[in-house]
Structure formats: C-alpha cells, structure tokens
Image (cartoon, rainbow, N blue to C red):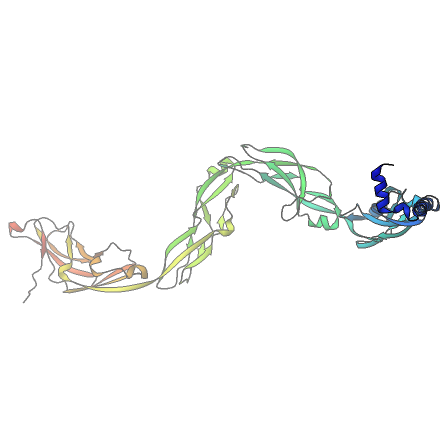
Amino acid sequence: MSDKFKTFVERTRFFNRNTTPKVVSIIFALVMWLYVMGEVNPEMVIPLNNISVQLMNVEDLNKSGLVIMGQQDYTVSVRIAGRRNDVYKVSPQDIIARADLRGFHKGTNSIPVEISGPPYITVQDVSPKQLKINLDEIVVRQKPVSVVTIGNAPAGFEPGDAVVSPKEVMVEGPESIVNSITQLIAEIPITDQLKEINDRIPLKAVNEDGKTISGVQISQRYVEVTLPILPTKEVPIVLEFQGKPKDNYKVTAVKMNPETVRIKGQREKLDGVAEIKARTIDIAGIDKTTERNMNLLVPEGVTLLNDSKNFKVTLTVERVLSKEFTYLRDEIAIDNVEAGHSIDLIKVPDNILVRVEAVESVINTIQRNDLQLYINADDLTEGKYSTDIAVSTAHKIEKITAIPSRIDFEVKRDKDPQASGGGQTDTQDTN
C-alpha cells in the first residue's frame, strides 16, 4: 500500500472504526434490493399517452343518414397498473381504445371510451372518459350553377350572358355544410378572348362570401358552358319630361349622372343603337330642386354594362321673378333706316316701362343698362307706321313686356341733303 493511501486511511479512520461491518451491511442491502426488484417484482402504476381511439360502427352511422363533423382522430391517456416487469413491457399500441357510435343522434353527443389491454395489466384511469362528437344529418340539395369570369376581355369587348347546362346540380353532405353553399361556380378565364367560348368547366361549391366549401359530394363535377364575347359601345342617355312646374317656377338645369352609358351586344344590334332613352319623368307641380331615378329603356338585343340602380337626374328649380325699368323715348334705337329718311317719334310717350321676368339667379343680376329698346325700320319708306317695341339683352329672359308695347311713328323723307343717310327726328316741343 502506498504512503498516500496509508495517510488517507489514517486521516479518515474509516477502517479503524468497525469498517468491516459497515461495508458488509452496504453490500447486503444492495443484494437485497436487487433480489426484491428482480424476484419479488412489486406492483406499480405508469401513464401511457396518445392512445388512438377507434370509432366503431361508422358505416352503420352513415347508413342511418348521419355523419361525423369535424375532428375524427381522437386520442386518450391511460394509467395502467401491474407488476414492474409487466407494465414496462406495455406500449401505447398494446392498449385498445374504442368509442361505439351506434344509437347516437344528430347533434353533440358524449361517447364513452372503452379501454382494453393485455391480461397482465389493469387500466386504472382513462382521460377523457368520453368524447364530444358532433353528428350531422346527411342531406341532398339542388344548388344553382353560375359562371364566373376570370380576368378581363380585351378593350372594347365584354362577356355576354353565359348559357350553362345543367343549370342546377345536386350536392350531398352534412346538412350544416350543404346549407352554407349558396351556389356552384364554373370559372372561365377570358383574358385575350375575342370570340365565343364553348368548354366543359369543373364546378366548385362556394358560400355567400365566395369562399370554397369542401366536405360535400357534387353529383356532376363538370358542366357545359357557352360564353359569348361581345363588342361594346358608349351612347348618350336621352331624357323626356311631362307636366310643368308650379306656376312661377322653372327647371333651369338638368344634370344627369351618368350622361352616357356603355352597352354590349351583337355587332348588328349595337350598330342600330345611337342613344338610350329613359322613361318620361313627371315634373308637374315641382317647386324646388329635385332628384329622380332614371329608368332606362334598353332596346332588345343589347345589355347595359353600368349599374342602372344608381342612375340619377337632378332638376334645378328656380322661382321666376320680375323687375321693372323706365326708359325715355329718346333711348329707343332706330335700326335700318333707309338712306335719305328719318323717323319721327312725336307720338311715342315720353316714358316707356319695361317689365322683365327671369329666374331668380338671373333677375338679381340684371341692371337697367343691360336692356336696349329699339324698332326695326328695315324696308320702310315714307309714311306712317305702327310697330312693337323690341327689347334686346344678353341675359336669358323668360319674358319682356314693354308698356306701351306698340307705338306709332312716321318715316319722313329728308329735305336737307346734308341729312341724307337717315336718322331719328323728334319734333316734340321741348318748351
């Protein structure tokens, strides 16, 4: 024995104080533990997780018109008891978990889980003890078929109304899913297409949001579709009115939205349409600005591309007011007097009253100097005449009345050669 070991033994004094009995005791205890674990084989409990559950009588369930909704791959956890050597031999595959669906009904059901395993172990617990399984009724419903175009046709062309055969197809599946299906759609790409499309198109089920719905059986996977590609044209909308606004009111502006509309159709039909008329709009008795719907009369053989529900016309209505101005006789202009003649207005009253009627937005802007009184002497030779006083203005006037409206005057031949060239003569005494 080396000096270092001797020194260790002396310091620890392990072997100086009943060391041998201690060592023997430790060895004996170890041997006894090995004996117990190997020969006595005590009872123990261990967990096993992720045990797959077999769903029994699914076919019978389907024959009764029911189907499992949602999850179908269920698992449970178990605790098994047995001798140590036995329980450690058991794997999850040795445990059989079953849930029998026979006799259950539509709706959410609690299905008991039955567990079996090797005969040398005991199942003490299972979690969960019941499965929540939703059963739904299998139904068959008829759903409409619609054609949906993908992409855009070339400029100046639009797809026409599709012809699909059949128009309805049967769908089978869980009632809740089938009821969520609003239609079956056949999608057709139309990019760069200039002629009619005839094709066999697959169907897919969608809900009201356009989302694809799975989990159902469609009785006919394909439909025959004919889709014309039609030329388009833009034409104006023409409005007609009946009736009159309330007395002293007038429609001063008509604003259509839109003013034009795009139509599509076969070329021969399209060429025959220059405008689209709207139903006659009744304006009888209106006395304020009004908005009306425009209901278009679309000729047979053509179709609107715009949404006609939003077609509106705004009728601006204004009150008609009047304003009066007084003019002197000398302010009457004489037009087109023959050379060598003059006009004698001696019998014309000194003052002429002019009454102007116009809508409110116009009448408020008219001033006295915006009106010009005149008479036309074109082709009038020497003699006495009676004529209406004319009034000119740049404003849009509803009515102009001069009082007096008619005047008498005389065309005289000039005696003074220097007066040649025509003119106006007023011989009224100014004293």
